[in-house]
Image (cartoon, rainbow, N blue to C red; front, side, top):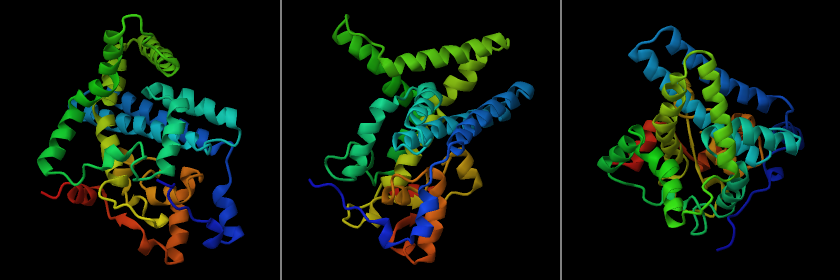
Length: 305
């Protein structure tokens, strides 16, 4: 099928409005990456200083959400918006965002750009994530239970390694992205061991990655495209979901909830998306977009009964 329709921002914004939105920053993207790591370290430190079940659950949720945050910032790097210098952009995206959570910027970029080119069409590589919806509430609970018990993590991250090896014992299991993942995670383990808390690597990094991270990734995917009908209108290619402070902390970091705006103008830095939304609202263009008041309302729509 042909690529989805695009819209020229010049038909909506004045040059004075548009120029600041597209401006790349040599420091803000890196600051967001530093912010993600600061929250990860802060949540881990909170549990180490005040070890109890409540601080542990909180740490797992915050760290898992910031692991999603690192993936979101890698996504920005895939669009070349994390830093104006492409080499710096890709280095930050690969080593500080993708590698720690087992992603690969080089592999992700063409896959994701194809998603933008063919959003919700048969050629869309992400179509399988949204196509099953709506589903039953029981089905949604089962999926969420698999996320929180590590089954999704094992299926997506661990099982494929053994499957490839089983098909061909000579198969090279570790690719370039996985090599970066191993190197960064060995560094994290070494740092924990040097601090006398080697077990924290498992409890405060792997457990969040195997539980909360898959869950909020699923919630993000549902919020973005589940039950969004295919449309020729660029304003209706994705959903924007309002996120309060708690949802921003634990489900939707770094303005990922402004997904309709991202599909409209995919080369804008993530920090420009709230400003775009506000400008579109002033111009009366938000009414034509698909929006939701929160993630709970999206889940009710995606799993009505």
